[in-house]
Length: 389
Image (tube, rainbow, N blue to C red; front, side, top):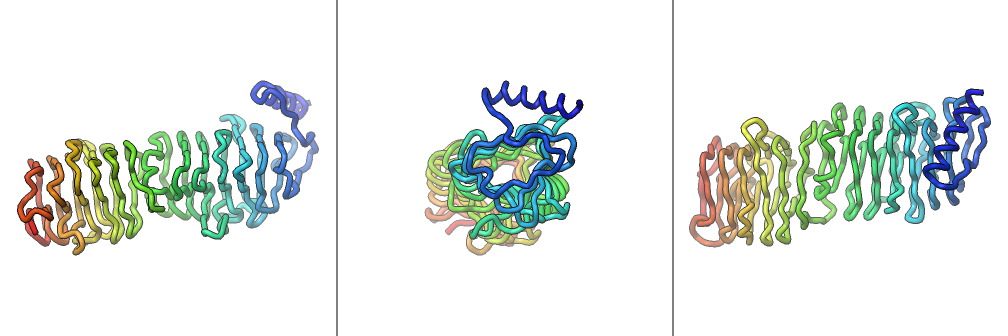
């Protein structure tokens, strides 16, 4: 009687939300192993309350149609299995607080299955009130992309109110351009990589309603696929810091403004830097209670490049209550490098442990006439406070 009532409720929900859909699999009382071509046509997966695992996937399953997973379903994955949402497919898994949808490794070990990769940009790629665990094993593709979730260029993923844990790699990997990402209400924890591994222009994606604490890499990791920040973007404050991979140059161009929220801390690996040009702006305005920190990943003088401003008269270029530390490697000649008199205001801040000067003005043979400095502290820099060509 319990099974009948529960199944009937799911069917009612299915009819109400999807207009017309019929579960392909009746209640069986046993785990159903899905054929590897099962998602080549529209499917609806339903919960069987008589079993702990409703479905078993034993391969890297391609999704070429519309797949819907109903609340309460548990899908287990054999070793190295996974889900690939192809460009022609979509995958909607919307659980509830009482009936989450679970994706787990059959053997319960970290990395025992690949995870879920989205090539599709279908708005029906929705995961809500889900538990995704034991993924992040072998790579999804020849590019070596690993993570519990991977989003390809121009892919689409909405991930909300879910738990992503025990991945042998990152929680979410989105390192390609032009993807559409939505996060909120999630917990990323106990993953062997970073909670999020993102292309840097997705710094507006992390959500203050998410928790990113408890992963082997304690920070959100940023890399570059050659994109730039060319539209107004806000770098979000969340409950962990950020880390920029070595050699990455964060570029802000085309009159765009990159705004860093108060309280954000960023750690730059060797060779990384920030470049503001083409009338763009870096708006970094912290507060006494929530200053902004730009640090070297290695706490040493000149551990990273620093901030480079060129060909911008944008009055929004402001550093206020910012600590700029460990910058000024030999290529930059200053923690803040200014070319051709860019507009810049620096207030209530600290420039410390530069490997060269604090400010360097190039291209004019004199100081930057468009630089305004007030209440800035200079500490332990290898060069002078102000340098010119």
